[in-house]
Length: 246
Image (cartoon, rainbow, N blue to C red; front, side, top):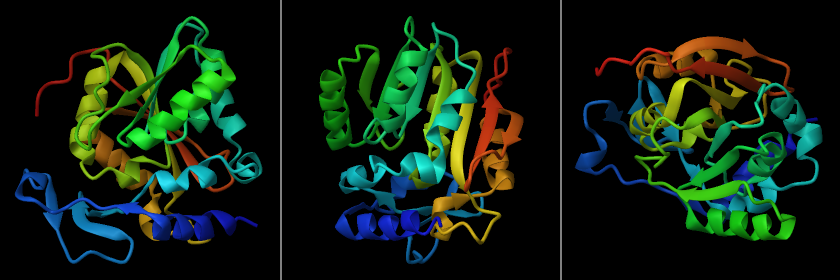
């Protein structure tokens, strides 16, 4: 029933994958390296090999018509508990699929559609004009920095994106910096504990792994909601108190 995402990931990867070199600057103490596996980059963070990154060639897959039937994104939106004035950051926004679903829920706020690929953000900008939605703001980040405005974001959402970050520690530190006190982070990731989920292993994550990685940057675990067909919905929160420097 859910075989198509796996096949499309393979097709997208063949069409164009972004690789990150194992330069000296990539190993600042948080990472180790290994011989890259078939779908990985050979860089290891807290025991997890980081996956390859699917490029802008994946837009067709991200915008597929049957995504609602396969992954129930409408249920994700319903469970975010947003306020009309919230500032939401869609990190690794890709084509902006989720950004435009979020925008009507924060009419007095905004959605920051952040990505590291300008091609993705060009697509978002075009969709923004076509849909006539004013409160979606594209933001170009780097592989180490989301460039979120400091202390202004109420909710960060990452949909099938975090496992591809080549610098997860640095990216999460920049996200924590961008969150307002008490701000939440929601991960949507394919369930790594379930071998029946037809996605490549490095493109799935377990609750245990994500919780360990978020604890390393001071985020507090809130809950897991497994109401989606093949993905986790995992929530963390930034403490209302200042997180001490490591």
